Amino acid sequence: GAVVSQHPSRVICKSGTSVKIECRSLDFQATTMFWYRQFPKQSLMLMATSNEGSKATYEQGVEKDKFLINHASLTLSTLTVTSAHPEDSSFYICSASPAGAGQPQHFGDGTRLSIL
Amino acid sequence: GQQVMQIPQYQHVQEGEDFTTYCNSSTTLSNIQWYKQRPGGHPVFLIQLVKSGEVKKQKRLTFQFGEAKKNSSLHITATQTTDVGTYFCLSNTGNQFYFGTGTSLTVIP
Image (spheres, rainbow over the protein chains, first blue to last red):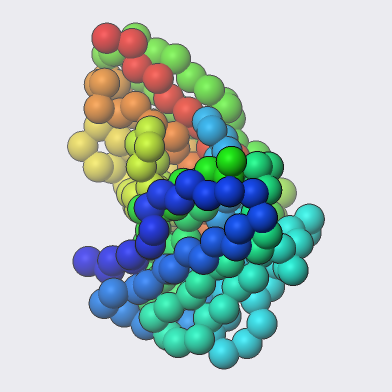
């Protein structure tokens, strides 16, 4: 089945550091990938839609200059949390689906980001 | 993405009891997908419903899509401790993604 790989799985770093998270579709091409944030015991919150070869579409309230998204190829999207602060600590997950109407989303394992 | 109302937000059941979660949308949906996220894990696709009034079963799980394609339910018969997790619905309708707010299920042994 379709596999999405997300790396790293865990990051602990100091405040002010920029952190890059990678999301790869391993056995299918994805023109669109999605980035989510999840707080403990809460549902996923869609942050942005990553579009291959074009700018990402951000959800209302998500700072595009804070969360930089690059989708340079059909199998890779990256999310960079710039100048991270403790309030950015969270669980970040990506998803992608193969082309075709109604395809299910395949989720990465997530990245737990802790900013000290 | 837009949120779809999902109830209840939390549910505690004794092992063996039934469990149901509901997703309700004000918009007609093209499809509805259900996912399960175990504690500490990532969401896993369970099933997709497309047709009005469609009902699908997976062992103890029964999924239903409303006649008007605005609501859906997931019912678990005789819950087991392995059913613990958060269940949420998702729909890709047109160019919009609709996410259920999720139901966190706790099963008490």
